[in-house]
Image (cartoon, rainbow, N blue to C red; front, side, top):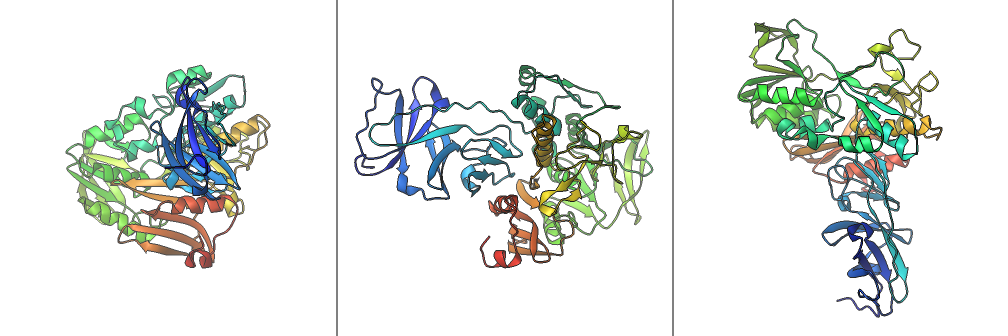
Length: 521
């Protein structure tokens, strides 16, 4: 039991009248507490001693069934909600650097003083709780926070940021989809269409209406300024136009793939992240699953051959068959439906449904003939403020070719969900003349059979991969080296290592081979 008269203690106060919104964390020093409904409107619960928390540490506490993270940084205490607003990961298992905590699962970052979301993905900012250090009786005052941030694509994040910053004009999002903006990462990762579309909406319609954000569905842009997107790359071979050849771009696509695959022969073209996730998902639902890939192993050029070989073995254990170092020559069918796939080496694969996952291409065709600059891959060229070469025209998301801060402003095009959100926020702030540079560190994840591989940085051009742990045992941390510097990292069952690497990169510091080998990272 804590001695209230001799020890400094941390308390959480709960306001009886306003409920969980006014949790307050207090440091209470020697002196009697005068508590009770007649003297104070809070109920106090002891959670730890002040000395239990050292500088640079965090501690998870629970009050009234709510998890809270208490942080001590440079002698000051702060407290925020303990669960990531993206998918509910416990932030106590994340990486704390200064006054930022990064989610161990998907890399979202939160300011531990204000609760603000500072890196994506994430649905909202964290609730904050006031921390007081007073002699004698506890005197508390609730901290009111009303912040909203989306975990959506670039356009939704842009719209929300504009409203957060008091933009009063009209905001219109144009989408070719039938639904409001979705968390499309769940289409291939989480049960596909076994969840209703309402449960994967980024924001419900009443939220958008409340904040004056209009969404025009089933529309496509022809000209004028917009926030752009990418689109799935289609197959270019005889027979690819047949009706049971599917791309995964929307909820409707996912529903069709799911229904067409149950108890049938599914062939997946491409060993991209989408292709492999779909193969894993269908492994216990389709009668058979075959995967066709051009490289020797999946992910060979992104994650490397060792990790690729491991993921291939994971799926083979679930009876997925791989046809690697090959490509499709033609698709043969009857009455407009594919019946078999002919590979370039002559192999013939029976098929009731074909899912194509061979990457994305910029959806910028409507800019042809305009003055907006695009590169050789048809990506829209922007600067670090997300501005195009045309005044008042911005681009964000998969379509943007932008300077990457962690690689000396090398121009890149990266189709990560987290970066699309960051693009949208930066574009919105610069639309409002609040000059803001893009300084995000790329972070993504893929899920295969319930196992998450996490990745941060930008590994293109790496010269070596060094490992901690063991890839064959499916517990490892991989460092992608370019010379003596770490340019990217990937992990499986090694949290929060990748989150920590991302936070170090975010500070602008380099990680060298000697640092990781000596355990100083």
